Length: 410
Ligand SMILES: N[C@@H](CCC(=O)N[C@@H](CS)C(=O)NCC(=O)O)C(=O)O
View 1 (cartoon, rainbow, N blue to C red):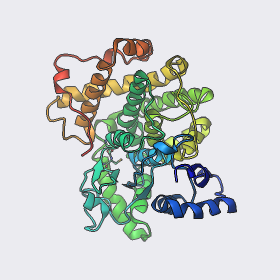
View 2 (cartoon, protein in one colour):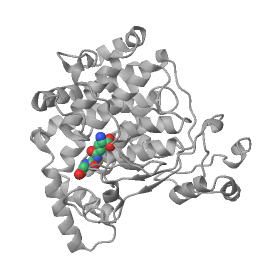
View 3 (cartoon, rainbow, N blue to C red):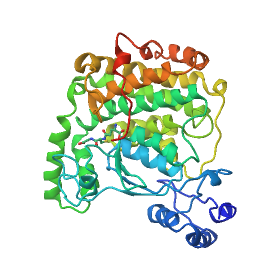
């Protein structure tokens, strides 16, 4: 089977939000052959995409490990989109589900339907992934690290440890800081549209009266969670947003990926948040008008299952555009987490799954990850981290090191 894999799993991909799907007869014949040898894989793939992909990267098929997983996500959840894009790029056989009727706008996710996979999973957040052994797990970042161990082909961790740290740093900044501009507009001036589209996403065919009620419930729930961000001046949030998109647009003139010609943790983190920037009215309008490369890159990232690329050496990717990209978001991220840490402290971090304490937990873990690099590895990224306003903020202060807890799935 392994020797024949390249033949059966010839890569054919045609997918984009704005491309007409086309699957040739030759491709369909290969799919039928493949069913014989790899039934569950092919069935899952076809179920989800209606398309055909390879099992591993070119020359990596023999290292690919069967790892069928089931993802449960939400229609407006950046972390769900991030994780699904990782599964697609890594060619991990999976199904994906937004449980219809699983959330009608109030209470905990999944509370509305006893049979909802969300309630079965019993997690306070989405996405949730059902692992090959049947266990449900939450928290996208440690899930992505687990998947590195479960399925070795097409890794998204750069092999150079200092670059792996950079990729994780950017992913964490994307996860924890980039929701702020999105949330700000989503739950202020765009709130009617955003609440309605998410309730339609969760509940499918509902009439206007049902939609009205659910959207109002959801609005009350979410605006209550906006917190201090609601008081930020509109112009400040907007300029933070456009500075980030300026830097990303510039980066995309030089390279589609940050650490070579293949995606890492960083790109998937950025992509997840950008899916929502692309959908919400105010931020989307600005992106469409001024940031065409970013706009199109989001579509590219959505499904990279046919993409092949290589990692670069540190000297090739520690560029001024990467530095500018980091500088456009990192100082805001550090200021935000520092402020949170002053407010909530460092106690009871272990059980935090999202929100303020989770952000503190993640930053402390990043500080530890940097401290764990060798002197040479740290030296290789220190200039870029210093110039982008990250180096000092990534050093332990006081007794912070004693409060580090590992970021694990739960
Ligand atoms: N650290 C988590 C965060 C996930 C998260 O915050 N998800 C949001 C939706 S995007 C959520 O489930 N919030 C809980 C709620 O709305 O009740 C991860 O990366 O998976």
